Length: 457
Image (cartoon, rainbow, N blue to C red; front, side, top):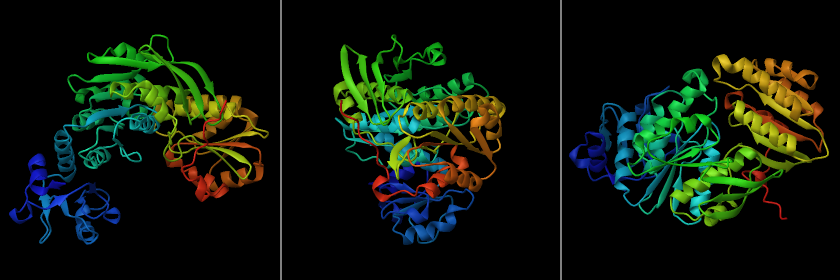
């Protein structure tokens, strides 16, 4: 528990004397989701959070953080609520002296790798990690303030789409281990080039502990060229990586490989298909190794990995094999998802249901053209939705059909798909392709969050 007096000291806020001993655990900025005993953070966004302090207190909030004092409400008053939240989180992070921190970022696969890292580390250490995709200026402080004093390791995901954002987040979390999964083209519209993206991702090292270690993708030339001054370990498929994969076998619902490094050879099976998930698993294992988890224990933990949301969630329903990857999309993740579609065995056709990749700026046309060519090589039928996908379908040729609305896309899918077919759903989150999937195959309760296990040999 944190008292208002303690939190106010961390953030430079003011607390009325009668409220100094009021204590809270955890924070929430949506009054509809309040849990008893939490601190309500009144943020100014589309709506002013101060208007909902009364609702939050009625729902059980212990106190509020805001920019003006309300009568009769235990509060910390600060000039800016978001800055105040971040400073309180930073103070709590300093107070957790027995906890080590892994900070994790990358263009694609951040959340998957975060979940894999948590699975690998939980085999040995009491581990907490970023819930859902709480990886921004609000989510990172919320993650830190959910950490318990007995937590031995915290895995903190950090996202960004502009220069400077990651630097601010890493200075709040101050990781002992900093992981960069890859350098892709997500947010290239804001960052200008892959070189710019690499520079922005390397901001995670600004908050790294003086004796900390960077865990970087050794297959990425831009990261190799950056040559960070801190201690650096490399993961990847290349022979010169500190932890690498050999004997890689990709199945329809899982991946298997031998992790080689630090004088050990460890058999690994992870319930996630695709070569890109082999690399994600290597990142998780290397980060766990740096945190003191033996590679063999990390491999055991990875066997129980379960991803969050529709991130390459592969399952069977009503005779269809479904690859649900609707959370987000960029050129790299689309290519990876199409490779999974291509390689999954099945009696029917491979159908790619695709939507626009957003935030690519001047690269949008060339990226969608390349995705169309890749889709034509992987799928028997391509159904695509969105203005940018007009370029994709043109590049894919006669296999592809383009639609201007999700309703038209759904109707075409309902007509074309037959049991036995393999269906890939892939688009940027803003295209809401998950609505088409949900309409076509409503989730069954037993399949929510369920993954196929690793096939036995």
